[in-house]
Image 1 (cartoon, helix red, strand yellow):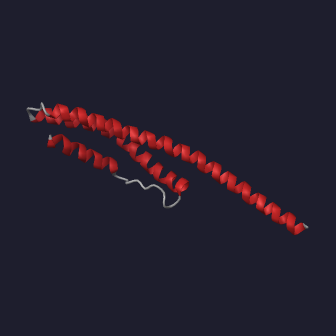
Image 2 (cartoon, rainbow, N blue to C red; image 1 turned 180 degrees about the vertical axis):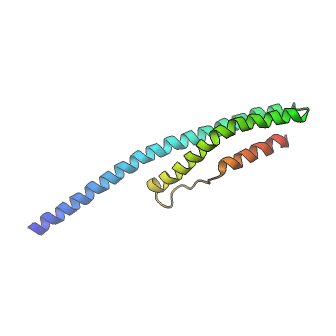
Length: 125
């Protein structure tokens, strides 16, 4: 009888631990998706800026105007780039916890790539 009680207690403890872990992962997944939406929003705003800059680039006549457009890009990217990098790092951590080791992978330097692409697109028009 005591073996059965001990077995039941072990199973109960295991179930409680599993429920706690699941609850924790649920909360972290909520944090993950909120953070993911913030990262996407920053990217969307950058794309809107790119469209505006591309339109302005068609009217550029002198190099100073092109430099002004680059400064507009930098004014958007520089303040948000560090925060975006922090978001990406946190997303990588959370994805490992929530989704496991084979979870969603983020490229660390994608904001830098976006900046380069924005500048290339600006001068390609």
